[in-house]
Structure formats: structure tokens, C-alpha cells
Amino acid sequence: MAQAVQPQEGAAPPAGSRFRFEWRWTDFFWILGVVLLIAGAASMWQRLTEGLAPTNLTSYVPWGVWVGFYDYLVWMEVGSLLIFTGLIYLFGDKLLLKVKPIVLFTGFTIVTMGLLIVLLDLGHPERFWHVLVYAEFSSMITWMVWLHSAYLLILTLELAIVLWGGRRLAGLLKPLALVSLPVGLALIIVSGSIFGVVAARPLWNTASLPLMFLLSALAAGSGLLLFLVVVFWKEKNSSEYTALVNKLSVITRTLLLAGVFAASVIAFTMLYKGGGNPTRAEALNLILTGPYWWSFWIVHILLGVLIPLALLFLAPAKPLLAGIAAFLSSITFVAVTLNIVIPTLVTEELKGLATAFVDPKLALDYVPNTMEWLVLAFIFGIGSVIFGLGLRFLPLQSQHTEATHD
Image 1 (cartoon, rainbow, N blue to C red):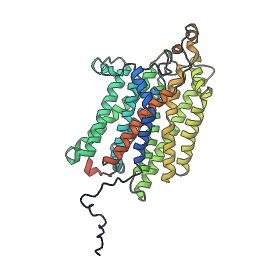
Image 2: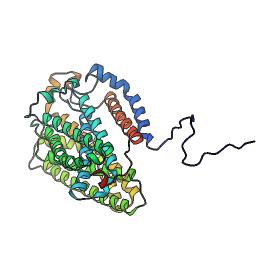
Image 3: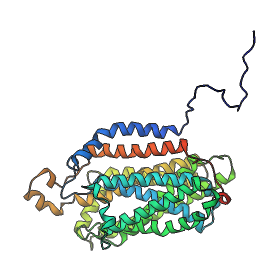
Image 4: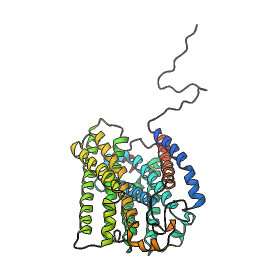
């Protein structure tokens, strides 16, 4: 009886053999994305068919959890790429080029989610093109839309060249990266200025807010960059990997400390009994001691600052601990943007109006409802599917060299 011939290792499968799907750990992203899409589908349909009516937004609280998450994603997207681009092209750190595809694709995914969220926050998202065609450059929102559109275009071109451009277009990478630096800086400054120029909201109306947005974006972005290096670097036993993790750990903890110092100085100045604005102090106290004090003290300060700092100081060269610190720091920064947006809008300065005209849409006590959270779940589901499918089908984890791509 003839014995069956065993195929050699690495040989092509015989003709007619069935295709076998090989599972990878990165498939977790698109599987999670599908789950989130299913969970949020009904709420997304409700938003598309009923507008903003099903939300808990009111005439006095027109910005809520969606705007907070939009700013958070802008910080993550722009902050990580500012650190990444600056280290490579201003400080000559060529090691980071090995993770350039995954860093750019992560930024592309995040900016896509951010733009979808801000579109859904508009009463008529189908009219978004008006701000491009009928631009009014005295408006900060006009500048934000134009800068974000330009940033998305630059990022998309960079990603396309890295993945498919080869040597023929590689010379365009450095100019595009250098142009992205001032555009990214301007986007963060303008994003903070949208709040900073609102004179009716004293906590926002300060020249320090745009600078705090920039510092926060760099701190959040450096954590994301460190996390991507820890997770997606291939040669984890190399000395280059350990050195890079150590460098990024130092940058992340330095920016976290700088952010804590700057925020503390500003807060003490606002709360000082001898000066300041009472309404500004009221809004700040609402963040520190109000109903959602835990989002600041536990989510941000404990989980997002103190624990990451302890890990980064005690074990800066241990990638696993550095990755945990970076993960905690990155995901908890959303508490900062939510605390910037919501408490300022729900202060008692409009109490007279709220009692004179009684209606559910004329209330100050805004709390995001289930529909708003599930719409966010749907958007994050889109991002997770894009990211997961990109990891499977695009050459994102092939570590490129400067000679190949620049």
C-alpha cells in the first residue's frame, strides 16, 4: 500500500486544497469592533433618523460627551505624531522609523473616529462642506475644520507613500512630515482656542487653555507612542528595543510631570481667595469636588498619572511595565477633556433662566445618556474594525528602514 506523501515545510499547498484562515492576536481588534458595531447600531440609527433630540444635550449644555471624546482623540492623534515626527526629523532618532507604518496608520484610524464624532455632534452633519466652501476665517471653528482637513490629507499621503510608494516617492516623506509639525501644532492650539475665546465661560476664557491643550496632547500622545512601540516592535530581545522604550518612558513621565505642575499652578491661581472669578472657581470646584469628582481624582490622577509615573520611574527599562503605564496614561486622558467640557457648562450661572423657563431641553443637569454612549461605541467599533483589518491585510508590521522610505 503506497504511503501518502507529506508536504514539505514551507511548500505551497497542493492545488484544490481548502483555504485555512490563520488566527492572529491582532484579530482581536476587528472582532471587538464588530461587537461594538452591533451594540451601537440601534443608537446610531436613532441619531441618523432623529437628530440630536434623543441626547441629553440642552440649549444651555450644547456640548457634551461627544465633544469631550473628539478633543481627546485629537490630543492622541496629533500628540503622538508630533512626538514621533519630532524625534525622527528634528532629533535624528532613526530607530522609530521601524514602526512608522503602524504609527501613521494608528493616527489615520484615530483621526477618522474623531471626525465622525464631531460630524455626529452637528445638528446637520450633511452641511459640513459649508465651512469649506463658505469659509469665515474670523471663526475658530473654521480654522479647526480647515486645519484638521489639511492634517488628514498630509497623514493620508504619508501613509500611502510608506505602504505603496516605494523608492520613487520616498523623497516626499520628509517634506510632508516637516509640514505636519506646524499644522499639528496649529490644530491643537486652535482646538484649545475654541474654548479659550468664549468670554461667557470664565473657566475656559483664559490664554493658558490653548497651551494646556498642547501640553496635554504631547503627554497623551507620548504615552500612545510608547504603547505602540511596546506592542508592535518585532525584535523584543534587542538592545535597540530596550533603549527606545527607556527613552520614550523618560519623555512620557517628563511630560506627565510638566502637565501636573502647569495644571496645579493654574488651579491654585483660580481658587485663591484673594482674586480670580467666582464663577471660574465654582466650575473648578465642580471638577474637584462635584458629583463626578471620581473621574478626576481616581480615573485621571490615580490611574492616569500616579500609577503610570510610579511604573515609569521604578522600571523605565522594563517594557512590560512601561507598556502598562503607557496604556493607563493614554486611555484615562479622556477624563481630562470631559472635565474641561462638561462641568463648565453645568455651573449655576444660568440658574435664573433654568428656573424661569422649565423644559427638559432647558436644563443644566446634563448627564450623557445610554444612546450617547452607544453611539460612541459604534464609532469606536468602526475604528477597531479599520485598525484590525489594516493589521491583517496591510504591510504595517514590516519594519522599514530610512534608506527604503526616506
